[in-house]
Image (cartoon, rainbow, N blue to C red; front, side, top):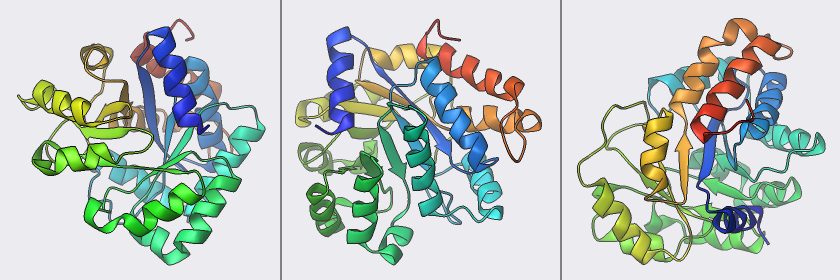
Length: 272
């Protein structure tokens, strides 16, 4: 069974909602990213999105854009990100890994090669925000052949496409909680509950909410509405603030402690 499916089944049995941090790999370094993954797991993360740095990240707000720029200065590639997943696994991580990347790098590498490499390195899913439903059939077929879930995003503006996107989803449906790009928000759009209910009715897999969630209170609000919550910009911003304690070669304990504490607070965990 795919690790994503197994993890959600475990959480359902325990009556828990998944906490899914997003991390830009290579910011501030490969070694720091490895340490951060392991610390997030200790703090209670249930799955993790491994962000591939990209020069034109249309869906990402300024915080994640800055982290991508820092990682790209180190020439971090999609294969470096996959290598981090492999090394984290060798160090004992049990987390399901989800690659977050745009379609151009995937297309340049080739569908067969990228999904085969993901399978070989135990990456369970991939999110490609600029690959719409109408154009994803080839990628979906190759992903399924290699046992990788191509996870769709569905937005409040998807309208009549919501049910079609949700009905064919694998792994989970990523529900965009806010209009626009990623980034921390104080408020979400007014129809969020109805939107999530519509997705829930159409989906045969768990539903997850992301874009703008940044603190424990917001996580608690969505725990009653969905199966998982993605926190991206708030974590990346916390890493940005801890950069002085995250050296180029390895993560300083103080910097790691800041991230571990923040993720533990988001989860409501005692493992901090």
